[in-house]
Image (cartoon, rainbow, N blue to C red; front, side):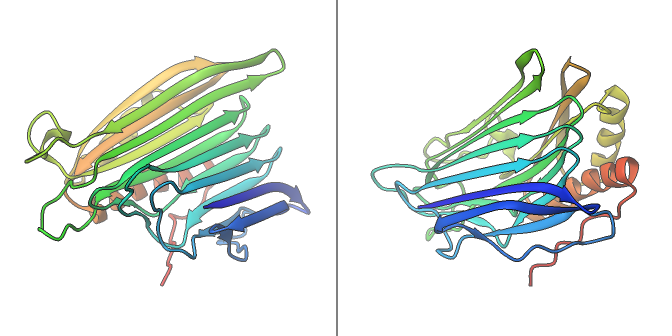
Length: 276
């Protein structure tokens, strides 16, 4: 069990925490700055090392007007056996005008007999910028087989808030429920074992950007597809899904895509999140 709140504002040209709270098995490390852009980087830590049955983790992130946050994790999120009930994470994200969030956790690993639900509720303003990436991989099983977890549900609800109220921009709902036996064949992740996702919401998202990102994916050993949402109040969403048999390959693919966005939109170098 754990609860974490992190609210970011802007002071003196740098983004800083204006409110922090944690209890239970979640906390953040001391903030740091990877460049001179003013973007603050926080690392989420789970000292318990894993999610277990009936665990509930609550995360509340707010990025105020003009503030800029890079949020990552110290290590992979591991879901172990969950007898009796699933483990769950509920995350709420709120972005102000001109706010930016890069959400870049390490991979999610689901082990044998694991059941996990991840619900993320995101509200953005028309001038907000959101980039979040995630890789899902099956964990090791004693019999050497893959896909021995029971179920993964990953749900992202994204709303655009204006002075006239909020509207739903995208509902990204992913369910992986492996059947018994061989589950990597056609019709279940098309024979691949690992899944990567990239979600982008920004006023600069358009078909041209989708085409450029698709060109980036062509240089990697993965199968990828991109979809665009409708445009609301001048902002648009993009969802990229990629399939592979390698966590490293998906991390490289998503890293190349985020590097394109960082350089084109913010003049920043690719991320180098060394955690060892």
